[in-house]
Image (tube, rainbow, N blue to C red; front, side, top):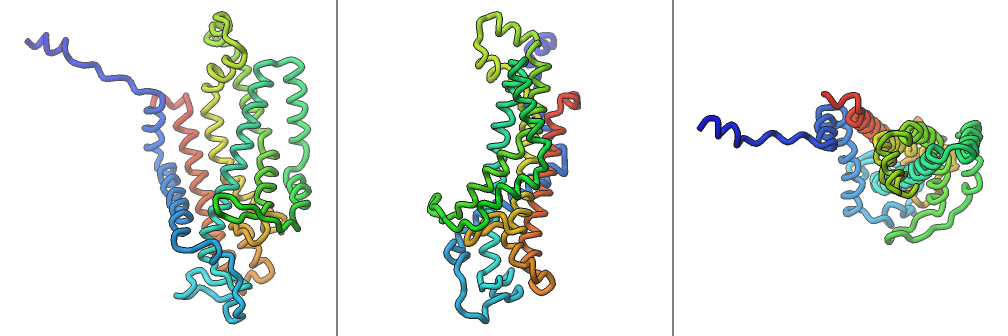
Length: 311
């Protein structure tokens, strides 16, 4: 009977790659803390919009006694120099800042991945041309390029309606500027991975079986490049938020009336000491969000690292 029981015992199923990745990620305390912090910020900017309308957040007060009020029971984060409630503007500004970060990184990751895949897989003249273009882009100081491109948008006050919200047209410009100037590093990473993968046995076997180049690139090679792409995308969101904040603070970012954390900070530029709440509150959310994203990116990097799979 004992022998029969032993034979009938089910062997434990081996963990899949994603199960191992999730287990390693959950063991990374700072990454879990970062994920919780980021979810809290996202919940704040989403749930807060149910209590305040965008019209209220953008409404300029005609009563001068409402201008530049410090935090109080009536206005938790105070008011800005034209009497707008900073609490409501931080909520809607957070939505735009996060949207800019996510959308810009989506453009950057898509472009960088495609260029890296094409250059690494086809090699030769295609690789040389694409990599020379990447090197030319990298030789241009990013901040100078960002300021030059955003300069043309600085005075544009046009708006468009998106999902019921009136958003400054400069949001689109900032997203494109950040997305189109931050893909070069990822393209070089993906290219180096493709160069090491395209001569592997599974790729040669797929080519022997008659698989097209498109199928080989996107079905066989791309999945093996996912780890660095995910990590780069995660960390890139924080970088995009910082870039938007810097441009807005310098007056070249998203224009009024659309709020972002960066242009809320800009309102305190001339009176940093007197209007301390205008830089403290959005600055706090910027720091918390970027820290959370960096912690999350570090955790994903460790969880997706193949050298740690034995842990």
